[in-house]
Length: 134
Image 1 (cartoon, helix red, strand yellow):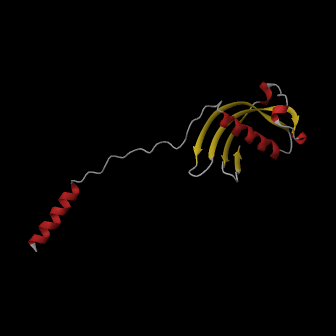
Image 2 (cartoon, helix red, strand yellow):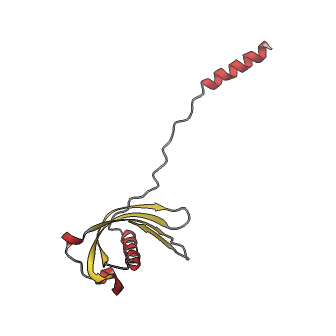
Image 3 (cartoon, helix red, strand yellow):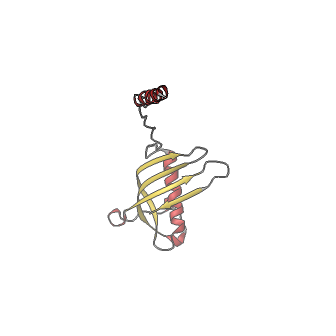
């Protein structure tokens, strides 16, 4: 019985001296591509086309500048882009269904807006796009 108690206390003593390995921070999953990157500009163009297609009143929104962007690559295909865009109203009404690139911008001081966009682009053969903005 004494041997069993010594074995029990000895194993507890050894376990109390155990040291856990240091915690390794996982790398950031978000990439920060340049705002003038062609993939970022294509994502911003696609986002503005979808936003303007869903509008029912007002004027077509055009791109003034890409303020910030982060990309979250997905494991299989595609990426999620987190875009912050400065947009301006153009001279074209949304019912005209003209592309924002084919319209002239209104005066900057009265029509600049900020648009936060979450855009998922599936780059597979059966590509799909999901867009959330506010």
